[in-house]
Picture (cartoon, helix red, strand yellow):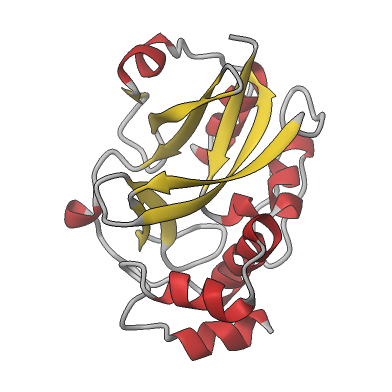
Length: 203
């Protein structure tokens, strides 16, 4: 396996933000500087995709404050996502940065490729899920080890929602009201953020 689709459903929907994971840097509105991958080359290809299930917001982000986006394949509906074709080493470095570990480690991904799920540890984004195949390459994402029902739901902050909204517009072509309606109805955001409020953020 020399290449893999990294499937992003959160702030990495936005290409400029994802570039910080590849080449290093700090995203606009974020509090964290990313070291980047061993190979800082841009993704070989990009595709807009949807996944069975949905996203929810939980825990507290050290980068953005407020809840972070997680993927739950058991939720009803479809989750909007963006697939980036990267090398296996780049994917491993992206996972390491998300887990706040040093880059350079290449974990054995045999388990997720054969069973569609692999837990690297108990942390926030240490569960890797295979969500399909495309053009002969596996599609992998990572999320929390548990689903929405067991999550500590928490509303996201305005800068984080803005980043997600820009990503939805850029990757799926959604206008602000459509992106806002999607985000405001996700568990964790619902009841705190309304569609008009998020639409205002995105315009």
